[in-house]
Length: 147
View 1 (cartoon, rainbow, N blue to C red):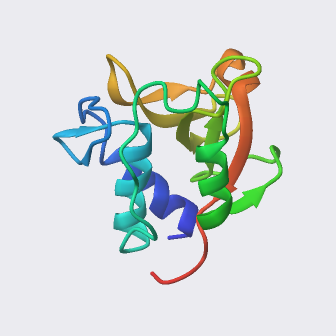
View 2 (tube, rainbow, N blue to C red):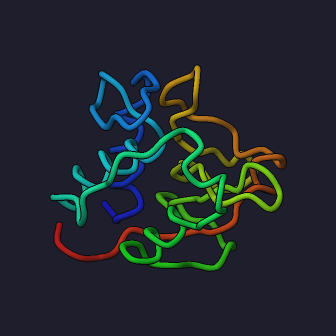
């Protein structure tokens, strides 16, 4: 399998995990970052850095791009297009706000989709509809390092 397929197979294994802020335990609870962390552990091994505690509004008061900065440290930046299976997508939920949500591209083409953990829904695969596509601020790939 290619790295992108490995990533999405791992991500789909989390579907059905309930949403739980700051958690990263398959089947028990995960937020969007927890999903990414869990997929990283399955595909890459140990997490590259500890994640400090964070609140629901962690980026809103000062608009710091904490998630985007961390993604640039550990993932491989890509152009917004073309899309590929397994890409990590960062979303800006409101214009002018910091990127605060992420997901993993599951399907490309005419019916694109992504896996993410979403409040009140848990880990789900959602259509990457035009409203979601308009919110994408960055696209990354997992590094090709250790298997």
